[in-house]
Length: 128
Image (cartoon, rainbow, N blue to C red; front, side, top):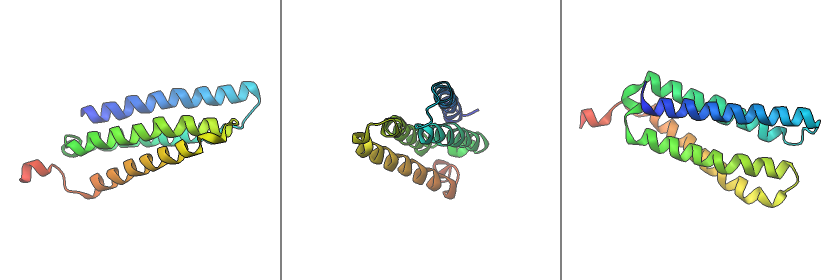
């Protein structure tokens, strides 16, 4: 399995653990105010990162390109900024909204990079 696939799948697993932890914390406390952060952690962190890892496992030529690692770094950086800010916003700290916006834009850039990878040709180094 390509290294980028392993990175995305391991990162997805970390987000799964965080998302489940958030869900447990909300259930135990009977306070579901952080539900948007819980949902985003699971959907963007666990599911989407896992899908990225699966895609790169099926496309090893694309997985070896530098842009695949750029995709990983940008996307995960965006999540690391966005998700805590989202949690803080919904637990009573609205001053983190600018950080949330910035992290969201970085996540969006990561998605655009992935779209580029999807629609580009395979290993462009081999054709050069």
